[in-house]
Length: 341
Image (tube, rainbow, N blue to C red; front, side):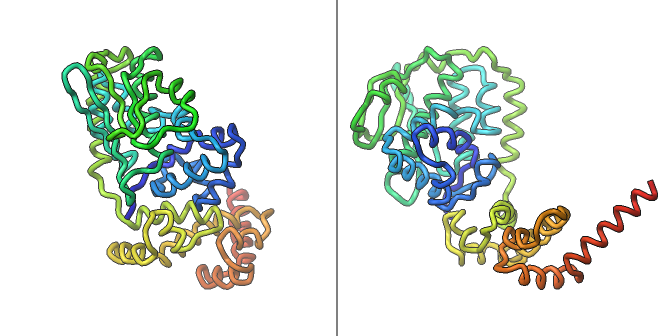
């Protein structure tokens, strides 16, 4: 299974995409990410899908610094529970240690190492994956986000000593210099920010160390709580069903694995994809048919049926009554409740 990242990473994607002249929804469809990804920040998506989206967006817009534009608009707030722990630490050094400790909860494939040497500290990021090196846009977004996180804690005047990037330089370095505010090193050995050791001692004025201790315990509980495969698949099925495009292949694509892997993992949990799909489809169907103004053809399409007749056969087999009969019973129950009241 590939690494996963919280979809909160894409919170500002629509506005960034529109600012460079591309259609955000069209780009999500192109890389086969459900549109609901933009509305549910805690949904887990495959890191490979995020990387394809960033690279495709940079190519379609012709904007080399697309990843940095994403980092500029969102950083600490996008980290969810990890952000709560980081911002309550007493010093920048403590905040970076907390970030290094918990970043995998937000992005399971990202690691941050803190390497002190004399009077400087190197903050190196590692984005693992199938490739020996993460794509350019993902790397720049990650390093840019780290820069913005530190600046949000240390103050807008803070600057690193150097910014290192392992890829080749862009055609135009102007935006990069403006973003990082320091000398740039391309074709470097690692992707990193080099900062002064004194920066680690900088106090965070708004910090509450006691609250930080409490939050750390809560986040540790999140970290050790196992998430079973059936829970993960149910979450994705609910999202894809609302988009009218839910198949085992689509779910596998979402996790960056094969359809056979999905079936194997679910079998180990004592269930199957068809059982999960049927249960979630039934729940959604009942909610959709409550709206009497909604055409049944539209309901069938949203539930992923090829025709209304196919949905009708499934519904009667699942609930023992037709949709019309179900709606009639629901109406009679509602009227009876009103009369009792």
